[in-house]
Image 1 (cartoon, rainbow, N blue to C red):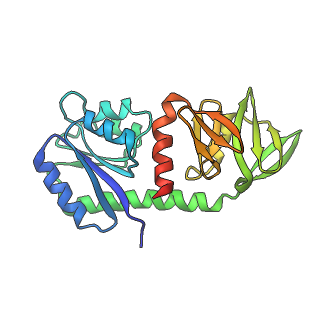
Image 2: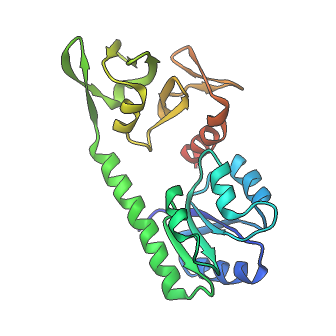
Length: 234
């Protein structure tokens, strides 16, 4: 059985909430944790709570759905719901999973949910197969075991890899190294730092602590880090 996923509805139309909430209740793999009626409510909720899937209307007052996706530094996987089709192409630039045209019929809703779980399954399988990363250290390729990696620190065109055994200076950029890591276990928390989430010993206002080392948290990463750590506790 698939893990239950936390989802929210963001739409200014009560009728749309009624339809989507009813559909969600019929799917035991989904848990509806929040219903918002504008982008401001959604932003406030997402800032404090982990969410796996967002059903998002495009045409809303104050902040449209597309504007919300542009504003958020990171956002949950999103299924757009709208009566208009002209934003479909642009929406996929923001990692939108599917685009549901109103009125939304149950078979089409189920197809979108299947697509969401398919992306989750692919990501999980990919992450489960990655146990180490090969990097060049002193001119030689070396396998870094990911369960030993504490954090990575940017060092110009190199990356310092702090592990449980020692520190390595790898010939790779932080951005390139980040792409090699399983997203579920690692996170960039600063432009210069990537950390292993399960190696964090403590969190402070602007730092995380790993093996007595205080690592800064960039302001744009704070909300996502809070969400990710909450998920680990669930």
